[in-house]
Structure formats: C-alpha cells, structure tokens
Length: 407
Image (cartoon, rainbow, N blue to C red; front, side, top):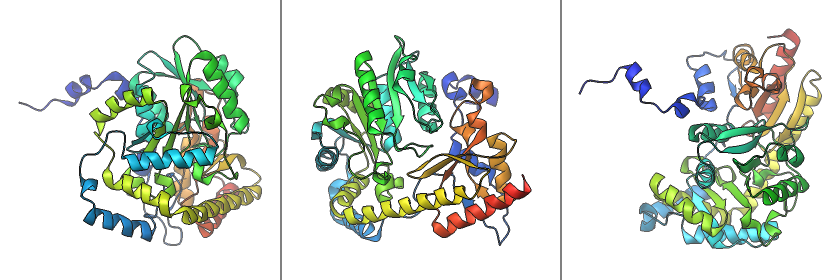
C-alpha cells in the first residue's frame, strides 16, 4: 500500500490534536539544537521543572534489589496501583492534612499528568468547559484542548492568586471543574488555605469538581498542613487531589503519580487507566513506597535546599531593579522582564546573549492576540530547582549583564 502524502496524512489527524500547541519543553529544547556556547559561558538550562539527578543511592540500591528479587514487580498489577502504596498514601495524607483518607480513595497513576487526564475523563466531554487560572500549567491546557474541552481563563491578581468570586462569574451550565495548582506551576505561589476553602465552597455550591494539583507540596515553605480540605468528612464529594512522586524522590523517569477522590469516581478512572497503561509500572510504585517508608529525613533535607535556593532567587532579584518577581516558590520564579519585546523573543535572545534557557510567559497563557492581558508577553518562568546556589549566582551575573547592555 503506497505511503500517504503529507497532505493526506494531515487530513487524518484529528482537528483538536492538530490545533494543540507543541510541548513547550520540547519546543525550547529545539531552540538550542546545534547551538555552540562559549567555553567560559556554558548553557545554564532553567527550563524544565524536574530533578536533574537520579534517585538517592539508597533508593537506587533498593530498586536494584526489587528488580532482582521481587518477581511481582515485573508483572501486571492492579489497575489502580498496588495496595501497599495506596494504603501508605492514605495513612500519610490523613496524618499530614488532619483528616481521613482511606485506601479506596487513592489511585496510583503513571505520573501526575496521567492523573489529571484520567480525572478529566470522568468529568468533561467535548463542548464542556473547565476553569483554569492563568498563568496555567501548559500540559493541563494541552489536555483540555485535545479533549475538545474549553479552558475558561480565570485571571489572577498581581501576586498570581485567583479569586473564587471571579471564578463564579465564569460558571455556566457546561462548566464541570475548577483546576488549581499549589504550590503553583508556573508561578511558584503557595495558595492560602482560605483561598482553597473558598474555591471548595464555590465548587460544592455549584455542583462542580475542584481539582487541586499538589505536585510540589513537599517543597511548600509553610510548616504543617497547607490546607484543611481533607478535614471535611465529605471531602471526596467535591475534591480531587493530584500528586506526583517524581519531584519528592527523583523518580521522574519511572512515572508515578496519585489521585485522591471518591471511590465511585476511581471506579471510572479504572476503566480509563486500563485502556491506557493497564497498570502503573511495578518498579516505580515499589520505589515510591520505599521512599515513603525510608526517606523522610532525606526529603526534609531536599526541601531545605529548595527553600535556600528560593531565598537566593529572591535576594538576586532584589538587586535587579528592572525585573519584577510576581511569584517565587517550589521550583519556580515567575518574573516580569524589563525588555520592550515579547517574552518568546526575549527567551530566545537570552540563549544567544547569555547562554540561558528559560521559558516565556507565552507558553503559560494567552497572548494579546488571543485575548490575554499582555502578561504572557511580559513574563518568564525560571525553573531554579536544578541550579545550585553557585548556578544561581551565575544566573544573576548574566541577567545583570544583559539588563545593562540590552538584548
């Protein structure tokens, strides 16, 4: 059978997928393909929110032992995850949040992005809409676009915080959910407990789901529970919480995430997951469980290191008067740049002039041409978690130079 021409192939691509923007991190990587950087100014890659290091050595040793001795790790497992990990998440969450989470309210997924996709599959169909604060996490927007679900934009204030009263004005009879990310990607902002409670109350009144993505909860600067949503005995009637083990235990390549939701919803999630991955990877699940059982002190140290880098970012921008920090926390600083150019041009120019790779705000929200306020063109996301404090010093030396000389 002759190969299809490019035109014929295009005709067989679904319009919603074809209209979805390319993966931003992969797009940014293409910007540096073939680039040669001066020996005295190597590339500083601050584009991706993922640990660059492998899991800590004790965890890798445990994983090697699992590979060699645990035959069940190589076989199909339960679609919603191994019971031991579901139970451990339920127990730890109950303690951490001061509420009650049961094992049958927990599902394990192949990463947090899959947790989001699976949850949305139970909530919204083409033609429905979901409220998404801007700046948004781009993979959330991509999944909504692919599914034909409208992303209804919720503007945030100067500190990148959304307001439940503003969200209420966006709700109509096709609205199915509100999505919040805290600590926020891309903004780094930690939503106050009162903000999350106000959105919970709104969602409950209007019969919506509240999806709270807490991928970066292990690096929240606040001590204690960041909210009391799980203390509500009826939390699973409204709340769907998402989590990722990737950041906590450096398991990015093993793709382990979690959903906390009502058992009846997870029964629907099970159908979706069974047709996509059948089950989460056995090794990754067991590694996550081992990490939860053995790496509490190590993770506490990782949190302190991230908080120290956050402090270094705040101090560095305090010395760059032409730059304005809108949000800084977890893995990210979201900043307004001082150049009279849109952020996608600025990001590309920083590669050439400063050997810096960051992501533009145009990857996290609508441009003016798309109905946006102009914030997308004015901002950059800097993922600083993979830069140690000497790397952060290099970042500010280079930003000071380009600020003084221009792009």
